[in-house]
Amino acid sequence: MENKIEEKIINVPNIITLLRVIGTPFLVYVLFSGFSDWFKAVTFLVFALSDMLDGFIARHFNQKTNFGAKFDMFADRLFFTTVILCIFIKIFLLAENSIVSQSLLPSILAREIIALPIAVYMFIVKTPFLKAKWTGKITTFTQGAAVASFLFGFSFTPHLFLLTGLVGVAAGLHYWRDSLEYLSKK
View 1 (cartoon, rainbow, N blue to C red):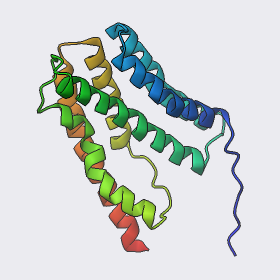
View 2 (cartoon, helix red, strand yellow; view 1 turned 90 degrees about the vertical axis):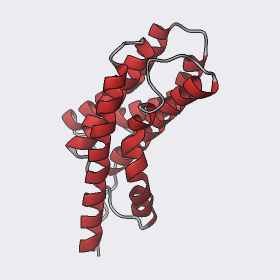
View 3 (cartoon, rainbow, N blue to C red; view 1 turned 60 degrees about the vertical axis):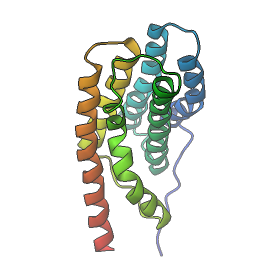
């Protein structure tokens, strides 16, 4: 019989993650309001940096939990996908001029597009959580940098979107490989 260890899921890192989830609709409001581009970018960065903060606290104060790892991954996908969809809406539906070309914008979601089918399957068959890899962490970082650059209106934004796409493809393929490897051993 398997011993189950009960996790303490109400801890500081999980509360920070929860604030990111709850704050996502607020960020949507900010992105579509009359606030300055700088306020939009700084608000985004505060929420994006909370991802690093919750992980740091969890690791350094021994508050890591399986729930927290899954919840953090969910919060990241919700946060970044929502923000990127807002950018799509602003550019395409509102015909807002942008330095980001239509062909580069989808690249920022490359990891999510590639990894989604296998992630859904892995969730359905209730596999254990696969640990985050360096490619995924770099993708999350470059997504954040690209979105912040877009919100600040920096001229190098298209380069960051392209970089995010390239790293995202690598992360998505890495996730597929690890998932298929896990499933083949099952």
